[in-house]
Image (cartoon, rainbow, N blue to C red):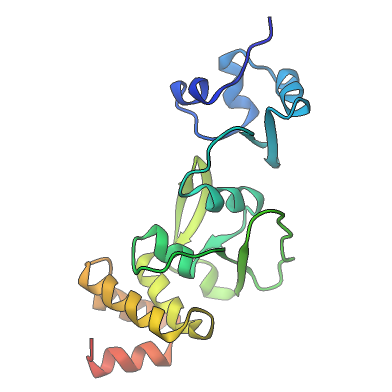
Length: 200
């Protein structure tokens, strides 16, 4: 008798909504059975060696996890990073990611993505390893995210950038020293002027 795969079975095994074939083998579901489940549309393949249950209810981080699964070199940034770090009140309709300057832009169906380009130090400084729904991911740190909001103010908007700065400092998500260190590596005249003026 073929072993079925349900959300309850996955969760009881400590597996999230996204999974790899190797995680299913201990549950008695070999790779050929996984392919059958995919053919039956019980399971969807969403990236190289990465699957999800078709019936799985999306979580708050599902869209981010789905994008990171399909674009492994992506860095969650700007408005999406603010949301993850619980800074500000803006709820992004798209997943904001950064990719290397010369990388090919990903084509993702069914998910709204806002793409920006990073290069040199911007690809590594203040970028943290994390995971969403068990999908390995990278995200800009709170301080880096605030600095980026001013560096990309034309995309984010001045009001949103200033609100995020105030909330991050008031909520102790960032420190002035941390922001200044980030500005030394990734300068922003707009933010530097605000910090120097001490108008917060």
